[in-house]
Amino acid sequence: MIHLESCIETLKKNNTYNYVLTSPPDYAELGIDPKTNEWEDFLDSWISLLNPINNLVTVCTTDRKSDGKIYPKHIKVIGVFEKNGWFLKKTNIWVKSFKVNMFRMNYMHILTFAKKPFKVKNPHMVDVILDERSTIVEGFKFGMSPLVCRMMIENHTNENDVVYDPFMGSGTTAISALEVGRNYLGSEINEEYKQIAEKRIKGIDLYRLM
Image (cartoon, rainbow, N blue to C red; front, top):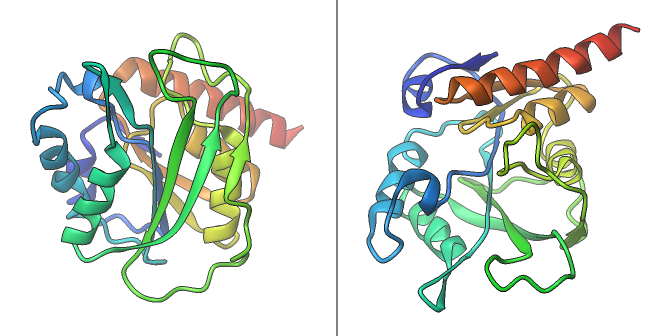
């Protein structure tokens, strides 16, 4: 199920979920100046509410080039999680392309946090994952790699677990969860994006029934 609401509203409800996998909105999507602490405040507003049964959360974030310098968003994510009692358990890198991009990073940090010791299924999962396929879906430009999502979900959950994405977007987390025998829960404040996600999920459901 995808709730058409802020993840803060969803997280305050009595929802049960095993694992969190998400890519939070960027500065530009939120209208935030990267030179301020607004993004950290935004992160804290929902990270402080997370309570997955498996005690694992994976956040996918790309550092940002702006004003002629690099803003290390992954460092800010780590700081806010540590503030809320989580420790960094595993770091992966998703390489989007080997091409030169003067404006954006061609890689993404995949950061997995835990609140207590937790043995993952495959502790020797590769650190660097190459997936150069386009993630643009019906005009939605902020999509995640389905390959990365499937790898994270399979390594951090069991069959029939619920994977929660606070920022569902075009629904890649939900699609990936269904493809590996898991369930999904999501939040999305943009009705157009929610419709895109539900259309994709319906396609997966129809395929599974064939």
